[in-house]
Image 1 (cartoon, rainbow, N blue to C red):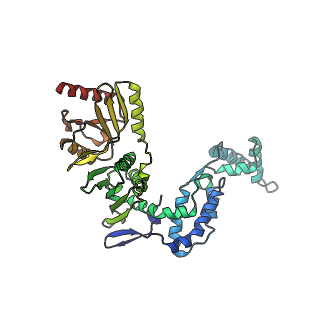
Image 2: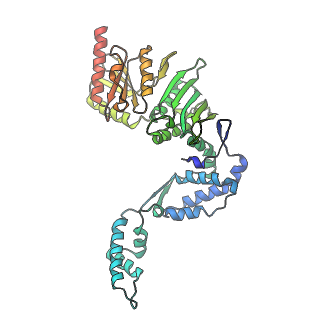
Length: 409
């Protein structure tokens, strides 16, 4: 991902905009990008130091140096560097340096210290070559790690993606953002919101009279902690947004350390149904499903497909729905995680405002919110957990909720 110093922006009257690549800039940069791709495609087995030297062999016009550095960064992010298997540099250095120290102590003017002789002796002991010993001595240093693989992308495809990569880097410094989005249909909307939940983003959702969704999303610079990790998740959401039918985004961005936030606006949308790509559940939710199914407790569980809407108050997108095997009673579950207390209070308002569907909101104890904030007679309740969610406790909550409903009905 691009860093702030690799993003080409302009700021005027409190608004930040990206300097997008035009056709002339693409034409000037294409030879350099083609060179970068060729170096990496054929560079498997070469050290990072050698790769960087080869990448620098192409000339770039001065006006394009910053952009070229950004494109090179994006390509390097697609590379995997590591030591060769079976190499233990600290052990190898200890063996070579110990033998070298002994050789220096007995060296004379007539029989001076011979570095190659030391390496040859260690190589003979280990039944390998002098070249292998030299390669392995400092193989744990970053510049001597070797290229193991390169996720190939062609030059034109990378140039096509450059502007969205710039936008992602800008959003890493957002305090908050709002998005108005129009989907092709309800199925596309559900899939997009599932992808938001997979990224564990904090958002507030409402539906406008014209059918558009209005989304308010917390930015990484608006959080007290974990801003880097959260910011990466937010940036990775952007490609999914581009797959929506239409969107308009506005973000408040702390681009300068000692100045007020600036506004960043973005709009677009491919207009296809790309948002229908299957999105898996977050890892903690998938593990919960696995543990719950092992209980065989009279309830079944699957991914939720509904968006729960309370007009005038808000919406929520559950992760799971539990169905009682005999009665068919359903209870939803939304996992809140530990990002924000505000998101929890938004769900409390939703339940107290009249949300009719029975739902459990699971949240980490790190948020310091009591389960008692919601009356047990309401259709929604909080489940506060430490560490990981308990399938057994959720099953008990489901049974208790059904028992209350049966007694009341």
